[in-house]
Image (cartoon, rainbow, N blue to C red; front, side):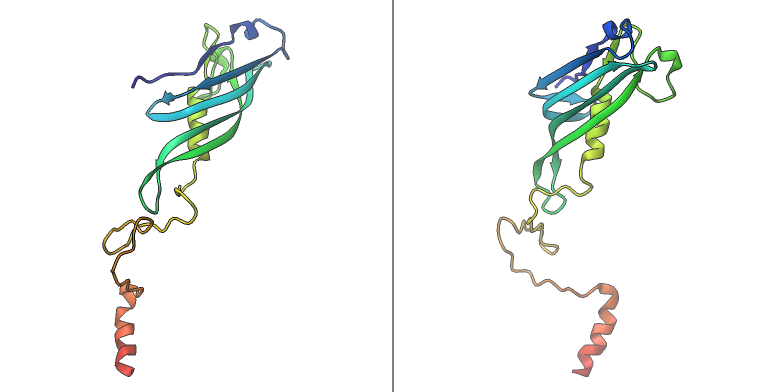
Amino acid sequence: MQKTNLRFNLGYLIESPRGTKSDIEFNYPQMIIEEDRFTPLNGQFKAVRTSEGILIQGDFQTEVETECVRCLDPHTQPINTHAEEIFYYPMSLAPEEEFVVNDDGDIDLGPLIRELSLLAMPMRPVCREDCLGLCPECGQNLNEADCDCEIDDIDPRMAALKALLDKEE
């Protein structure tokens, strides 16, 4: 699938007085930003002309395909986040690595949305809170079926101590 972007032409705001506002709303059934797929991607933003450029404020909702850290099954992770970022204009006055308004008046919300989505992802995504995960011995998905493995809860580093305790009994 082809990579896409979220470009909006806000050149009319650059020519407007400071404080001029514009509302932006989008609803895409699917969006690929760099290598990440967002299905669907919905958002509502307010663009405000400032002395430094254009301030983008708003919220967006999406779902990202990921993998459960317990059972390794694929699942979709809902993401709801808030954006508040300056897109600097002119580009020559922008601090390094900041978002900018291109000379043609375009801004690309894709990198901002991707960044915020990745930051909003949980460190350990799970398909559901009560996910049982995989058996550490045989790899059976314990959500689907039980296994006959005997789980030895002894840390291998403590095996020598366990052997001493077993001798005393």
